[in-house]
Image 1 (tube, rainbow, N blue to C red):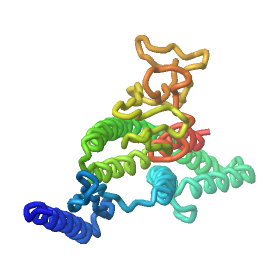
Image 2 (image 1 turned 45 degrees about the vertical axis):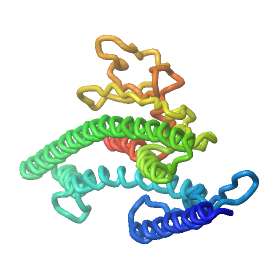
Image 3 (image 1 turned 180 degrees about the vertical axis):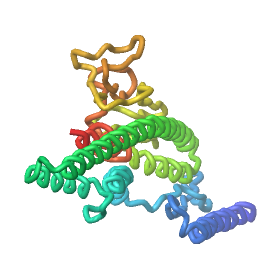
Image 4 (image 1 turned 180 degrees about the horizontal axis):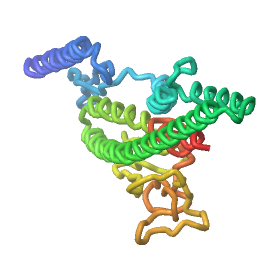
Length: 315
C-alpha cells in the first residue's frame, strides 16, 4: 500500500470517528429536547478492488421503539379527547353550581318544590301563592339561562372543530412534504434522521387530534390512515379533511349524515336541513364521512361535546 493510500485510510478513520463523536455530542446536548431521538453512526468499510481502504460514515440509526411510540400516541389521543370534554363540562358544572349553594339550580328547584307543597297545604294564602309563583319564575329564568349557556358552549365547540380541522390539514401537508424529502435523502444516501424526528413530532400532534394508524412503505416514507380507514397521507401526497361549518348552531341543530333523507347536499347552504354537516376526508361522500368514526383525539372530544354531551343536558 502506498503512503498516500495509507494516509487516506487513516484520514477516513479519523473522519468517521469525528462523525461518531459529533453524534454523541448531539445526543448529549439534546437529551432533554422533546421529539429528539438518540442517533448512532454505523461505520462502513471502503473496499476497492477487493481490498479494504478505510472506513466511511454509513447509516445513521435512530434509537426509537416504534411499538412503544405507537402505544404512546394511542394513549395520548385518548387523553386529549377526555381533556377536551373536561374543559367544556367543567364550565357547565360551574353554571349548575354546587347543590348546597343557595344559587345552584338544584337548590332553586328544591325551593320551588317546597313552595309548591306549602301552596298545596294553604292555597288560599296570598303569601304562599306569591312565593310559589316567584320561585317557579326563578327556576324558569335559570333554566333559560342554562339553555343559552349550553348553546353558547355548543357554538364554541363547533368553532373549535373548524380551527382543529385547519390545524389537522397543516399537519397532514407537513408530513407529506417531509416524506418526500426523506425519500430524496435516502435515494441520495444522505442522512434523513433529523427529518424523521420532525415527522415524528408532526405525527404526535396529528394523533392528538384524531386516532391514526400508519406504516413505513419501505421507501422511507410513511402512509397514514384515519382510525376509520381512510387514507390521510400516501407517500408525498396528503389528503385533507373538510368541514362546512354552519354559521350558527341552535338547539334543534344536530349532526345529519350525508345518507339521511333530509340532507340537501352542496347548494345554497351546503348543509343538512336544520342540521350540522359531517367531517369528510377528501371528496364529500357517505364513505368519506369520519364524524362518527373518530374514536379519540381532540376532534372526537369536541364532536361529542357538541352533538351528545351538551344536548343531553337540554332534554
